[in-house]
Image 1 (cartoon, one colour):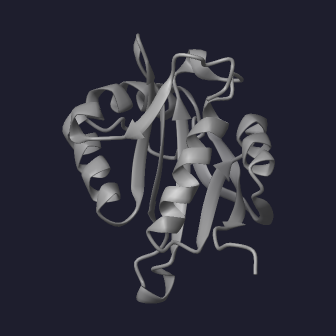
Image 2: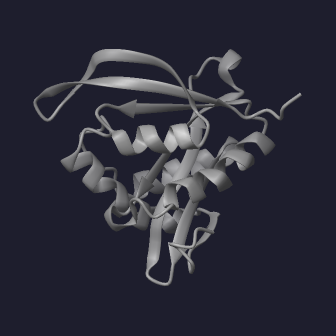
Amino acid sequence: MSSLLPHARIRDATAADAAACAQIYAPYVTDTSITFELTPPSDQQMAERITTAQLQHAWIVMEDEQGVLGYAYGGTFRARAAYQWTCEVSVYLRQVGHRRGAGRALYSELLPRLAARGMRTAIACMTLPNDASLGLHRAMGFEDVGLMRRVGHKHGAWHDVAWAQLDLTPEP
């Protein structure tokens, strides 16, 4: 664990973590364009997302003595069968958790879990501008693979979306 987060631990999420995850996610929905969701999910909707992710992918939380600091998950990239070994990943942190190593720590636990469940490629989709997310994904080894210009409209502005991917298979 990062020396900046000495008392934090990472574990698999359960539906009981839904309220904490929903609380972390809501400001991203209401106050930023980082996600293109327009309405924060309810605790019940978040519980369903956690349960679904745990079936074939993974959802983990980082917590300390004050509660959940952040979460990361992998989920279905696309519904067609040919994509079944590719997943989309995301990390969300409590606003006070940024720049302390929490994102790296979460991904360091999440990505091996996804590989162990048969995932071969992780995809990250990032609304721009978002230097923190770009930096995190590059630091974790993700490769920039594309940019879609002006594809999302939120908070009165059009936003570009960057795509990055990481090979989860072991080196030959």
